[in-house]
Image (cartoon, rainbow, N blue to C red; front, side, top):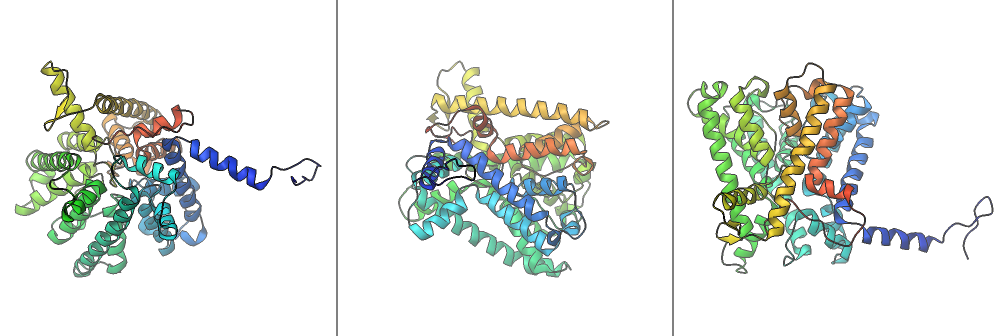
Length: 456
């Protein structure tokens, strides 16, 4: 019998409410599940950072919201310094948020579910497949286990490597700093507890190498991890197509960016010997992987370097990884499409493989949607931030939308409306720019989310 309400009405039976909720979840488009999931992480982080126990000094609500979104989106842009504004508890909250955002929505909950039930529900499997853009042939449960174990192993090794390096450099509390920055680097979050980022370590090859390795391993994507494991177990004879595209494109972008910065950016080219190439490589890597660390002052670089950073940030990292941006695979598809048009060919061929028309269509839509959102955001920022230069506003917007975290100085001086604009950009960037649009444009459906970052 239904229970009576205080006014004599009847409440729905709990089992009916649960059934309705399950039906709503099961019928929701994976894009909407992802958008709602990340929003839930961000709200929880905002609440935790708003607690007095999390704050070393009073922090306004809009700044705690900004930091929470920046951490979950693995961006790294900040309006207040994390190292001086938050207590050890607050820093730990930021670390947890970075980890949750880096692993991605559905990963942690699904891994816990697997640990207890040894299986995945259809909704969780569908959500994880959409979140990572997994091919239909890949076992989702095995993939999630590999992701969590790989993440824990790489971050542990990275922290152990950074610990003595930080100690030798005279860093206070080197163990905690090593753990925090290992997680931040692997998740390409870009959060640093150092007041000037990694500028004090521009000539320290050990710290630069470890941070770079962690960032690249996170940005390359978990599909490469599974691909490598399958080859190691003898299940595959050669590197998969997507992995080959990711490795080639990522390598060329970082190498090209390094060369341009080392030769054409005065603040880098003037550095002595190996430090010049170390600084150039680190800044090209940090933009391409979207980790957002810096060893040189970004606000002081010239126009050529700004252009290099913007291009690398827009392209971004790789699918099924911790980085943002359009993704290297989407960029490769767009290049292949351009070549096909120029050569008057009907088929779009990438590395010897004819791409499905649907994949080409999604890559084109991703680029257009990215540019539309970026144009609107920059326009609004130039209105809210009176006096801001166009190149600076564009740089900050691209950095937020691609979840990079590099800043030319505008973020720290943003007005409240400007902070909200950048917050929305970071949220959209973490969900996936095209997936974000799909989430708010479609009605609930059983169809899987179309991804903008996967080569099929």
